[in-house]
Length: 306
Image 1 (cartoon, rainbow, N blue to C red):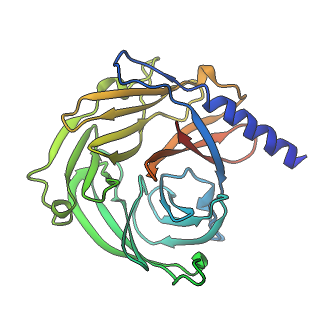
Image 2 (cartoon, one colour; image 1 turned 90 degrees about the horizontal axis):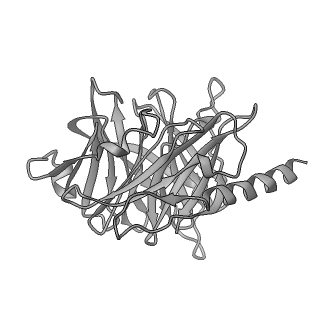
Image 3 (cartoon, one colour; image 1 turned 45 degrees about the vertical axis):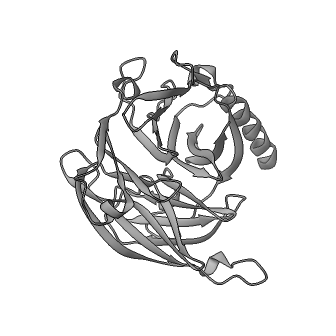
């Protein structure tokens, strides 16, 4: 019965995300449909509190898998590496005050990566900062790595003096786009790593991306950057609230508006539907959705925009 339920849920998810529609009148608008990729199942073996049941806050691709970040009230940061089936092959808690919102990756050598995410208090009354995590990779044997042998550790902290700091590294690894409260800041990677934002570009998020159709607040859920465009996702966990993806140019102009509207969903959910985390892989945009239906826990799913 469990397998039948899982198949039914996957079918419903595919139907639901294929119902995405576009709002606005710009000529650049395209219809958005979500291709279901897999369910994501991070793990956390802490005996006191299992953080893996929480929302995935950030996601970044590497080789055939995915790094994910999660938190528990910003007390710890949980990093998982999931294989192509969404199964965890590595996980580690980092003792850092981090919300884990947004995760980006830079490969600096054959066997070394950097992960970037947010750290510090995640509210509008305290300053947060960016943190870099170093990942030492096992060497390839016959073209494959044993990712269960990863080693990850905190590397550097960058006190950018921003509130609600959620950074992303552009796909070409040359710029950071950083959300701070209701603004977006874009600067070169070199300047950000020197804590110098004096030459940064800054613009405000469009007000229509922050308020739902019933005047409910839409939370900032993800940021990614590619080819000089900044992709920003907003939405809360309410079943009836819309989930938005806006695309901005470096002038702060909205060039595309996309909406995932629960009113068109073909699934029956009773509790939660929340978008969390976006990232590029091989030029395609991926995002995660957290769902909660009946009495079960939160479940996380990966989709690709098309």
